[in-house]
Length: 109
Image 1 (tube, one colour):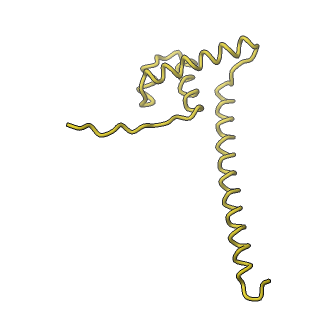
Image 2: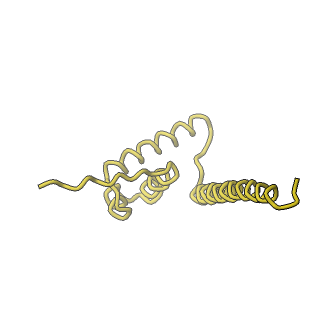
Image 3: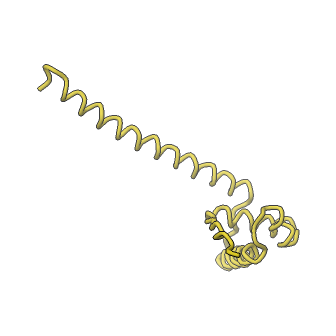
């Protein structure tokens, strides 16, 4: 019996950090959070280890990691920038289209 291929999911860095902080900030177990998110506990464990390493490295340099509200704001701003970039790309295409249409009008140079 052939098994269908697993669907691969890729996760953004922000998602990994947020998932790790669900464990770190709440004190809940990795398996509990992994079940809640519907992801593999081993994968989440790696994300938690990576985030704890980043936190420790930041503390060595006297820096503190972003708070949950700061991470949420950063994610919101990144989404906003993405939307603005899409809008700009559309406007560039629309401008080129209308410029080409203007040149094709009767009586235009």
